[in-house]
Image 1 (cartoon, helix red, strand yellow):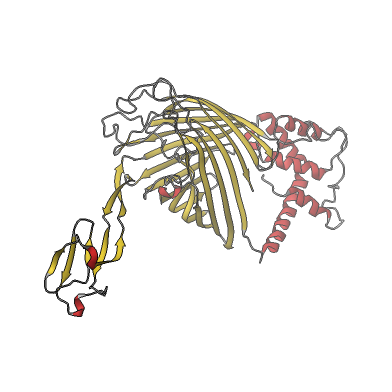
Image 2 (cartoon, rainbow, N blue to C red):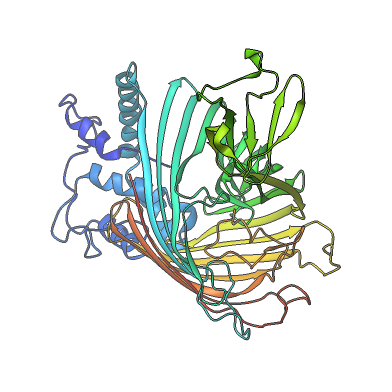
Length: 554
């Protein structure tokens, strides 16, 4: 039984008529000391079902009235599906004891929500929201590995991102959601021979510029949602696509309380990494097997090869020259138009050869050994013109992915996420090398981090077994803290890299409400040894991967 604004409902109740809601009992009477409900609630606190006063109890000598106790029972009931049998029994017993108060809360809450709805009429629903993130990565793209003579540097990058969004409900069932984003990388060491660079103008990442990150028009009615524009998409548990933009449309429908199905079509280039249109079909199905467990099935199918641009430049040199005119003995400039047929109006001279023209002789050479009869008209300098040539190349960037995942709350402080993926494409690339198309990822989390509550935290461990062609490790549209491999381009082929196996540990802590710090460390190795011809050598181990991030939302 999910309740919202219970405290407001209780306060509202105190402002109503002094006539008690129930003739049989006073809902505001303090419960006596020693009542069994105190022990039941304190047990739920110790089991992490509800929060106490900080010392793990509900107040020691502080007596509670029945409405205060009912509020606690309502909150505990929200987690009924994820608790153990002992706690379920306690919640059921408490619900029977406070049935009258809970029923009265329902009635008062319904009235309060109606009042709030009336107050909202005529008021603007527009609001701002946003977030900032500072993140440091060591070996972000998996380029650094042991055993290679030319890998002497450390790959690292420092990332900054700011997003600012607007949200509004201009009409019933209609939502407008838009956001702009700025991000850049600095102190970027590429890992090759220790070289480094600051990347301020990279078309693949939209560095040092603002971009439209989201612009959605969403209609939602009777369990059906339709969205069009630049939509932020999540597929499955995140191995395919997570919190990234697609230009296009999708429709989703809620079939009863357990099943939701979504399908759409969009341009993946909206995320900012591709420099050409990249259309894809996508679907997502969720099945809520219980209040604690949800299963997902997602697909992503790209509709074309990825076209990438490369540029070359040609320089054309135009030699300069001096432009003369003839003059007579008095220094008067003559021209073909004044009737002096033996003279010409203009002489072009490049320092070695002069040419003249008149209507009688046409083009003729001019003796410039004696320039007394020539007058400088102007000087045309040597010029250089640069021409940009753009070549578009089709890359082997094909995805026909299927992902089956699960998210389950094992206990109040334990959560498990797992997802497997398969990319149904050709078994070999254009070089005849075998592709590993299957992958698996899981994350086990302990703790109870709440974004709006300071000093809450969690820790999690992850395991990866991702074949080189199972997910996109080049442009990173997925949910992981690691790239998932080291895919790169060579000639007109995506060589897919080496995939990844390994594990990681991470911790998150809320420094304040809406302010989070996260640190993570990963120990990784290739999913398989390097196929011949990809990196020029073989290796068995990546250098370690690490990250630290500070995020604030508002």
